[in-house]
Image: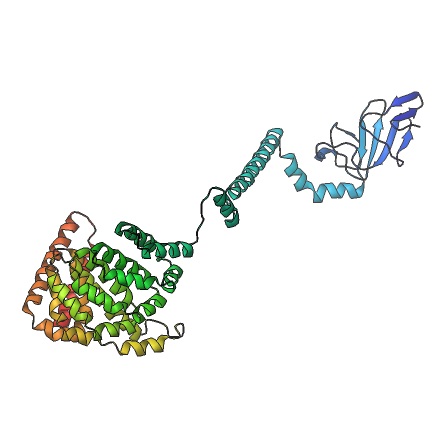
Length: 439
């Protein structure tokens, strides 16, 4: 018998109704019976059909594996009878799963399929975008090749600084060109490695020569580059001291007439002294405080006074931090060495001797709140050696009383206006703390 046909007592009947009979099927009168896998995919098994008896099987239903299936050739219906194992399997283990499956309707399935397609498209776009971004970047060698074809030169920072130094030292360079070169160098030396490389190229020496220039613009720019290179860069600080930078800076500070030059040179001095006790000791022994005191007295704007007082305050507090254990000795292996070096810096005593206990209170006469705040903080830091001077200074006591009343009135007015007054409260607290020490 050929596959796809069934012979009955009345002749040949077509068996092409999605039924494929395997070798385990047998033929009865007007019926065809099989045991096997699902004969047709479709909906899950209905609860009403789960029994031992033979039932007509709905069109499109899935037939459980191992069930007895019979095709009635007279009615054209399929009949199924479940065995013990199949009945138990479908009723106990898969009831919840099949219930969940039956809960999906065609609309939900369509929406789910649509979302899958959208997610796939979005993922494809992300991948394409990443590839597009990556394709925008090229290696250094590729850039160099492209630049070479355009007759352009791609330089590293080291190459740029070497070229700038050659141009600066050229006899054909004008003052304007040198100023432009110094501007470029100031930008580059903010990176620690670049500043150290500039020193190794001899750049420190031409900066010091710029400080001695008769052109105040070159003095200003040279001091600015030097200060930026020194900032938080111990290697450059050491080399600068060894090359006589401190003495050159103090000389320039004492002789400069332009305020803009004095500001940049003072910035370079502060950068050199910060966290460098060796340089601070040399600063004191070479008359640094005398230079600053003269600058303080002649400054009418208050700008230099504020910067000088801030620098002195920083020097005092960083030494106190070392001796108060501000740096963990376990984490900082050089802690003992720093203590030894700072012990040789007698800054407080020098401030008392050079009259700074009388000079600093003069900054309180400024109308700027920031200047007053910095003066109060410096006065508190200097209190251990200046208290006797403070107590005998009637003008200081009067200034503190007047300032306290002024800021208290400002606080009350801001309370009425519902504005922030924290800053003024801090200033009042500084005044209170100083007055308590002076009692």
